Length: 358
Image 1 (cartoon, rainbow, N blue to C red):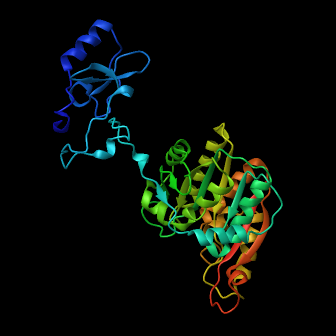
Image 2: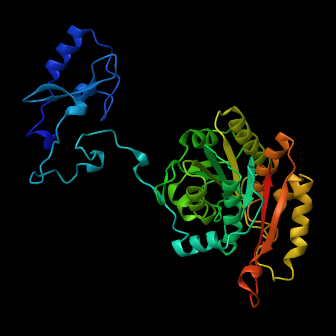
Image 3: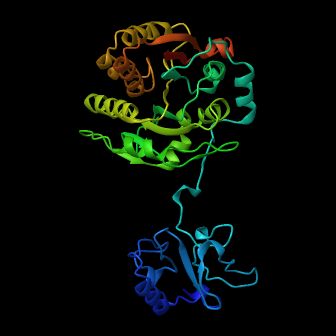
């Protein structure tokens, strides 16, 4: 390792001798590879999991006490990965979670307006909910989260299900990254990984950080989680229309099992917009049809609905199937459309509902 030549020497023989004499356990850690003698410089030489580094002047030094390895005037190879350096200068394993997803679909002004104009709902502590993701309906999103806060709701994790709008890359998309908003929203990687391993018949589940970041069905909701549910982690899963009915049921039942087997307090939150692309006077017919299917738990009809009814049939089925497993009826606490927020003169509208299971 060329850039360590000035200050660091890997004393392979000395480490090996120390290891044999002390009868330490097998080396089980290397920040740079599976062969600590050859490719790493920090090795576990004790039962307590302490790591040591070989320095040419000081012998074996605890890694936590090691000095910075570089001075500003030292030259480094251009191809060295400096992302592996911590702020203290210690070399560690590259952390894939260093990147944070951006909330690129919401700005501070719009977010603050949604909070200021938040609709008033009764305080509540639901186990599941449906909210819009169009910021036109920001006051409905703000009203939902404000009602949680006023109800004293606290959650360890929010499982966030919504549409993968473009419908490509995979039948379901997830990310294990946290979100860079305010003081941050962490990802519940354990829950995400469990969801990614749900066995489907034909469906393909893919990890794609860019898609989760770009799709407003996820990124619009994150600031509200950060403000109203501080400390809660998020586990996002975006589902495409391409997912077949049988696989939607398997996915729903898999998520239900994950929630039931977890000791965490989990909110299942589905990000859904309803009737799309119709004139303001025409969407009601489709909303009535959708509401009938919701109340009847008619999953097959919901799965066949197009954009005239909603943008994510799978998300709604997952929500309803979870409530059914708990013996809870869905409650529609708010219903509106874009024309109510934007006024007259628009040719197309989108309808919105806030639905809860308490």
